Amino acid sequence: MEMREKILASLEQNGRIELKELAVRLGIEEAALANEVAAMEKENIICGYNTIINWDKTSKETVTALIEVKVTPQRGHGFDALARHIYNYPEVSALYLMSGGFDFTVIIEGKSMKEVALFVSSKLAVIDGVTSTATHFVLKKYKSYGVVLEKDKNDERMLVTP
Amino acid sequence: MRNPLSDKVVAIQPSGIRKFFDIVSEMKDAISLGVGEPDFDTPWKIREEGIYALEKGRTFYTSNSGLKELREEICNYLKRKYQLDYTFDQVLVTVGGSEGIDAALRAMINPGDEVIIPQPCYVSYLPCAVLADAKPVIINLKEENEFKLTAKELLDAITDKTKLLILPFPNNPTGAIMNRTELEEIAKVIIEKDIFVISDEIYSELTYKDHHVSIASLPGMKERTIVINGFSKAFAMTGWRLGYAVGPKEILTQMTKIHQFAIMCAPTNSQFAAVEALRECDTEVEKMVEAYDQRRRFLMNAFKEMGLDCFEPFGAFYVFPSIKKFGMTSDEFATRLLREEKVAVVPGTAFGDCGEGFLRISYAYSIENLKVALERMERFIKRLEAEKKN
Image (cartoon, rainbow over all chains, first blue to last red; front, side, top):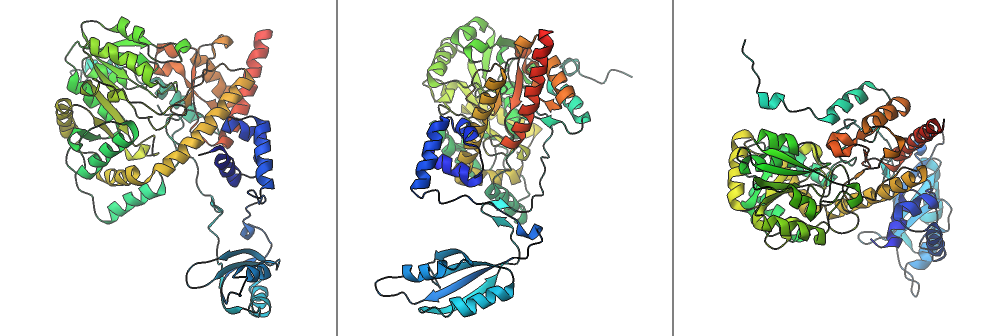
């Protein structure tokens, strides 16, 4: 792995890691690491830092939906103009262009199923160029961003072994 | 009643690690840096293959030497990774690397033959040699040589009774590795003195500087080397109990006899899973190696900051710091560290007398665990330094 890849792999796992510690772990100077991270932020390789939250463990009511959207691409703009139209809604937390049976995957975070349904019917479905939508609600999140949300494993190894 | 026991076995000392384990297990909430096995689970692909083999009812014996498919994959793997050329009939699949060491010694030793064992080293070489009726000859490796074996040390230990050398690199407990040039020096002596080598390469995947070089890949060495390797460390498969030995067919044939009558065959389920490990898991191994390497640097840096002297090791997942300046034995230091700060490390003496003055610290733990343990160690060392001043 080249150094940039190693830095990114570490930050992807833990965005809050201290640069001092990461520099030691990667065997490079802290200043060099800081420069590299800053450069990647500027180049938009690092686009932000998130926290992985298991909202199910909080009292906040949230619901996540995955919506398959079929569209008619627009002359001269392809899918990009439609994509922009869709991702500008703050309710949309992720948007992907897909291969296969439909065009976009839209991921919506809402307070309730009703709120999400309303967004789909009154905002998404009526956009010019959108030909159909199919909404799937997430029932339970097991793993998110590579992290298993329910931790149930202890270190069961014997304490001292040869 | 007559004495039911074998004098030879009774004379063998129980492992020093065992003694320490007994103290640690009495202790609640002790943090351990004492394990000799990966903290990673076996990669899921491999576990899944094991489950599939069980589902398919593959619960029979395999041939004594092991599944042919596995032995062929072992040959491909050794060729791909270490430029070793073996055919499947030169492979014996064993119950962990340890069984391979035992079988190799028993297949090669005549009573009174001398076996050279460089220490500090893994705990089974010496008792296995004794059980095989060999006379163990110890070489005390030196810190100033970064615990590598030198040609001079080897030459000095060789007599006309010397049959073989056990070569344990990358090394448990020191983390030392030996590069090609250094091995060439050793090989020259081996060939000149016409002795053999059991090369324990169980940590071959876990090197952090140069790629591992197997002594068997050097000219003239293949015909006098038994290479021991296995799945425990590279693929985090300790509990599957699976290793292998490769070497000259005439030796393997005799080893297979011992294995056949003592063991029958290695666990079938593990063998099927291991095929997947060799075929599909390069990426998983690479990720684990990168994680170990980061922890290694992290530990070395922390030791430097707290004033614990340590040569930089480039293999396995151990560091071997010196505690000589504190004026205590390894045992005293480890016992006090355990009692006062509840951190378990293994005294260097568990791996041979020349481990006196050193500790084996394992980094088969998450960085988070290491941080907690290091904090406690730092506190302990500060206390020792304060005591020394008064």
